[in-house]
Length: 231
Figure 1 (cartoon, helix red, strand yellow):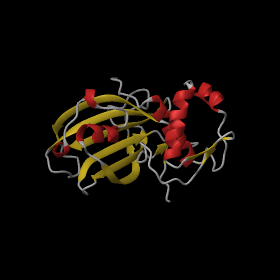
Figure 2 (cartoon, helix red, strand yellow):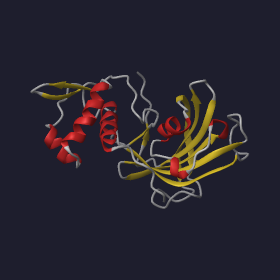
Figure 3 (cartoon, helix red, strand yellow):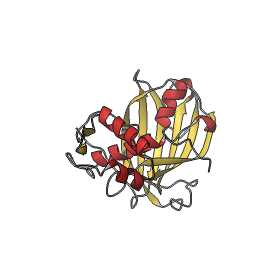
């Protein structure tokens, strides 16, 4: 499968920590390990870690005390890159990753609900991971009236790609969750086609309130949970 451009290392670290904080795996007031030890455990440099921690502090997830250490602040409202990604590991958290299966501009098929202004869309199929575990098959349809994309333009964070490439911001989304069999294009690393999967349909809207994207995600119920937290 084609590799998608990954987030910079410091963003991967900060996003992973945000998801652990929001999942309750890191508790309010908890002191993080010393920076050198933490950097070594994450396989990165102290400089990169400090950049990640600085981003957490800016978003209100961290309190840095000179001479004492770094302390978790739960309850921050600043959104992370993956704020709208609702799948987590069964124990909570997990850094989202993606491998591209296919991307093409095509006519919208008849089984899609009506959305957007065009009869064409960019169809994107991806295998989704949490950390290194494959957890979901994902099919996204981006309405062509909002712009089109090819494989070389995409990163692991698709909403970030929309912002950077198309000037398109996803402001909110409606999800409907039920069960559905895995599709016939499901990668073998995830599941067999036809096996029962958790199923999420999403209608994503731009800042103007226009539905610009429809997606459907089939997830492995033993490897991931759909989580929606109310603030």
